[in-house]
Length: 136
Image (cartoon, rainbow, N blue to C red; front, side, top):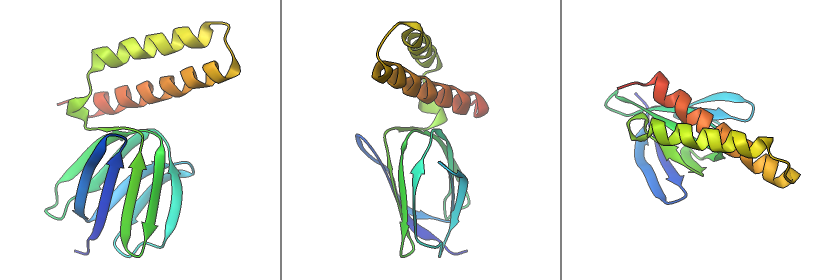
C-alpha cells in the first residue's frame, strides 16, 4: 500500500508527523480524500472531523478547526488553529463555552464581536459533534 508523508501542525505544536496511507479532511468546498500521489493543491480547512489511516491500518480521528492544507510533491502539510482527539475533548467545558458564545451573539455588539462569537460557536459545535460521534 502506497503511503505519503504528512505533517499536522496546530497553534501550539506538532500534532502528528509521519507516514500515512489516506486522509479525509473537511475543506471549504467539501470533504477531501487524499492518498499517495495526490495532485498538488491548497485549500482552506473548515471545522469538522479529520480521519487519517496509518501504515499499520489503524485509523486516527480528530476534531479539527479552521486552517489550511497544502499537498505538494507527494507530501501533505496541515496548519490548523486547533486539533483534538475525541478522548481529549472535555464535553462539559465545551458545553459551557457553547452557552457563552450563544449569549455573546444575543448581545448588542459590533459586527466584529458577533462574528467572533459565531466563530467560537462553530468551533464548539464541531468539537461536541466529534466527541459524541466517537464515544469511547
